[in-house]
Length: 174
Image (cartoon, rainbow, N blue to C red):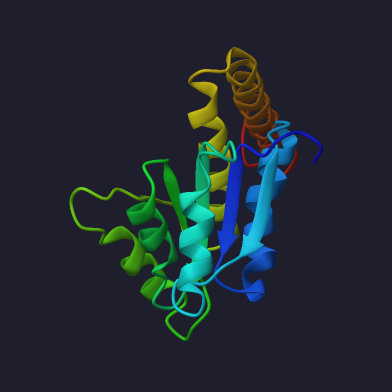
């Protein structure tokens, strides 16, 4: 994206891309510029630290961190910055992401990390939550969010209407 990134998306491994791309897609839908990279809390701690410590001066306002297994990335990121950090647990082990989820939600008092659901839905919600954070001071984004919510509501109402038609066609409703 041409504009200066407002959101940084970190993932512990390039294997996490398919999940974390959902956060990028959500941000792109709202025109929010972002950057995405791989940095591991365990394998490249100095790289992770440098990325996070320079985030604010580079213009980032929110960081999304996705990781699987022990999933310390979001906690390490949060410990290095006062920017909002959003964690995405990734289903990378036989525990189906439960290990990552528990690693992320068990942050000690004083170092908050907002934790989303495991997997793609969580990554999409992380992107949307980042938009909501930015919308606190950006009326244009707030309007886009309201329009998106209205569109989702209209979609549900259309599905409910279609269901009622089908029930009548199948003789299951009057």
